[in-house]
Length: 404
Ligand code: CTP
Image (cartoon, helix red, strand yellow):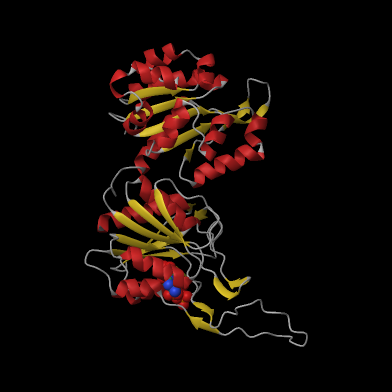
């Protein structure tokens, strides 16, 4: 997996920087071409000369001197490094660098390259336990993960300070295993394909302040968008109200209601090679939304809300499906699940349907894991074990890729 791969290793300031010498050596032993970029703080812990000897390449650290020494393309060094890499791993990733990456600060060569890179970005957050568990660090890491960065789980144990807790850099073998796993999920098998993915709930207006909605978090659709973009697809993500970060290299279109989603899908559907409807679109909307806020009537003990059906977006896509276009739907069933999902696949003219389970632990709306059965046109049903929504996304894309 690593043979011939261009691995860019980013080193930030921290005592664990010395361990990354072994990482560079092992990556090269495994056949990878390795370049190293360091922050100024990292050079205080390990000399660039050490990394240069281990990697067999000049080490980039200072933006200005480096630009001058690589004479031919002055001013584009950061872009060159970013495009050279098949994978960028930052280890140790300090709290400071993580915060910078979260907010797009780019005041040194390492953060500039990270901002410019399109390849998978792997971070190994490494810092003293108290810094690691600080809510601000945790929130930053969570944001980066939502955007599609891969986070190597930190190890627990004793720190150089004497503190015990999480935040230690994992052993070299563990980081390499993690990198291989990421490369495996980032094969460019969907390059050149256009994917349209929908996510999240829809909100249907009752009046200017109230709506009918549902509990979809958008996590499944966002995971699909993240995974597809990593595999090289050009992804448009149409999402209802979801409080999630936009994944890297994904074009996001925000909508609110089923009608708006219908319209947005209509605009993008024609050119899509595949459409995945992961959104939990409302089946009904208030028939006559009030123009002003509905007041609580003094004598009104109950209030009737008349609802009318929304257009079934997926069904209409199925009716006018272009030749070769692949349609994937989701189904959430509580009874006769398989039978209903198969029937839905037929009725909506789908190629695949992903049957969600609500009843099982670890599955459902806000969870990070999901338990699904994937059914194809021939009626084959494959029940997958409980896995992360990102892994479910890749399972769906594996099957989709074969159909494209
Ligand atoms: N869907 C859609 N437009 C709607 C409703 C649903 O495109 N107005 C899509 C969803 O995105 C999902 C699939 O249809 O991919 C299945 O939705 P679901 O609500 O489970 O099924 P329905 O066909 O609406 O039937 P029911 O609610 O009766 O199960």
